[in-house]
Image (cartoon, one colour):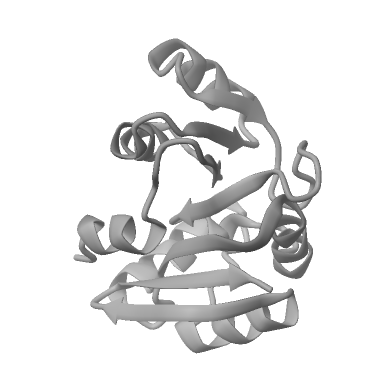
Length: 173
């Protein structure tokens, strides 16, 4: 299993920053990032209205809103850092989403991605589950993602793969 300490090392959350969680799910990772950052403003964006309502109730200190990665409701260069954990494969239009994430990040801003390796057992399980529920899982290998990030205006800083998951840390150019 991918170490959460490596994720936090790559993200390096710090007080005074604005940090965006894209595809925040239940908000648990955003809450951990906020606690680790001590004084950062952490925003949780999730397309599911019920999940956002739950985040607002369980984690009222998070700034949560309904939204998708392809159309983020924020000004240009608003965030110091952004991340997505186990959500990238749900993005309807990955290239549009990556350009949109680059838009809301400040130049030099960090973007950290935790994702499933498509050829792993977990990746195969995700794709099977996606077929059962009628959802396309747009899964990419780490190398494929790195190429797409570069096309969208990012420079890959570091990447690491371990088992069924991988991490990529990129910086907005």
